[in-house]
Image 1 (tube, rainbow, N blue to C red):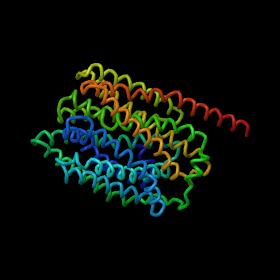
Image 2: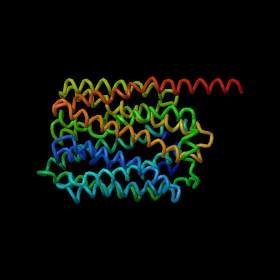
Image 3: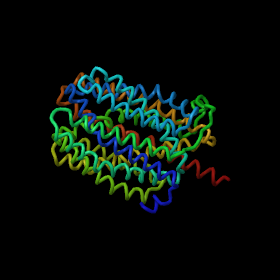
Image 4: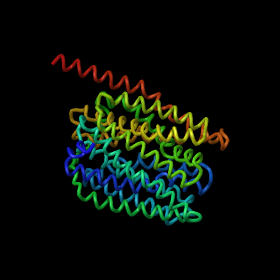
Length: 409
């Protein structure tokens, strides 16, 4: 891994450091933000509406943030993303007990922060890496993110358990704000690359690369899962089975240690030709371990899920990201159009997230409180498995077409 890291440029190393600091700030509060919101009403409605609001905000804000990136630069939008993430946590600190009355403001602030950050992040990955080394980069970045995840959850769990009521949460949220500010300062070392001021939005809509056009339904399906399962279902079921903030923090720390080991192996041996196989293993594994934990919500099942989940989730996420980036690069003029692809990507993802939250709210209406969490937790990840044939048809066929064309030449 260290040899891979040494091969990166100085700018790319600062980019990784910046995101490592940002990630550590995020993991300090990340898993406990959902618990904090749940404790405000002791139902899953507030969590679902929060997810719904930031999903809607993403759809509307991504285009606006793309326009801002053209007028300034992608790195400036990324820095503003750090600022608005900080503002999101300040909203939680300011309103604290009355936050349920301002959940729409919180959701839209978080959606704007995500839009600003991810516009810059996606363009940075496209500009600072190539298709050949992108898988390794994503896994090395994952290792750096996960190192912070080893310390953050248990540290937060200890802090929260030392105080009565919600005061411990406020201490943790303040710590998150500090690390977001440090990440912002570090980002000043990363210049990034300018982009064309001309928009190709409608051209990409009408005539994208062949692979991108077929990835729409995959991105939509991915949004259905990420809007609910990845946002709060994992945290809430592990919180319920582990029993308390400190136990949840210790569990997540152990899970992150497993993730570091697996990231190391994946970073060392990853290759673009293995993306589909890696995704398949990850999706089947996360589905089966989720079903196990849903049926048998005991510590042993949680341990199994804790071993499988970090590896499987990152196999899914990194493989999916690499496929999306490669689909963009299939366009001969992708350098000029890459921002438009990133903006358009958020449309099927955002619609999928909204549909996912809507499905969860419908399930809440027809299932009793005790059934809702285990049933939804086992159903949503099956979408990952359903996506496997579609991805196979997209990328295996694409590779065959490329081979035929090269042979003809």
